[in-house]
Length: 173
Image 1: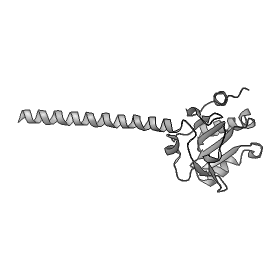
Image 2 (image 1 turned 30 degrees about the horizontal axis):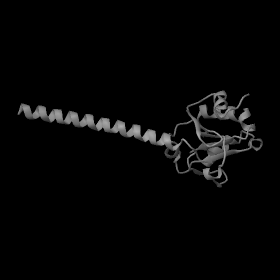
Image 3 (image 1 turned 135 degrees about the horizontal axis):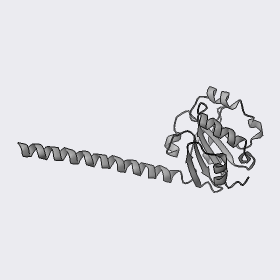
Image 4 (image 1 turned 90 degrees about the vertical axis):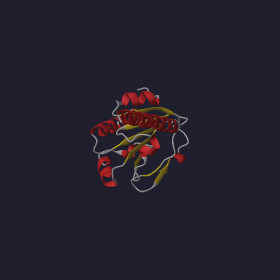
């Protein structure tokens, strides 16, 4: 009897260990897959505030800066304010601000900025909540920087200084 309990305990322990290792390996593979998927600008389609659908297929050339944000996030607010008052807006960089907040909250937030002077700025609403599936992470703020050939230069998670973003975009002050 004692031998059977020992064997059962050993079997359960080994099974649990194999299950945990499998889970870890699956997560590593999923991260690698999503990292490979964003190495070039992935396909996306989001509506802007007026309801017009903006597709990544319409982007033929970079540089591109994609910022995942939320209007109630203080770090996002600071970073976007810095980006929009920096030389980035005058370089031809396509800037996509993407949020999963509703149109009302987003429109209220952006009303404090003078967007008419910023060319190549798109404010998009992730109504379906698919940003994380497309880009591998759904953290705010997140910045995805693509070069002229639409190849990923870097992905920055969390708040970053505008100088860092400019450096990755190849913009000198």
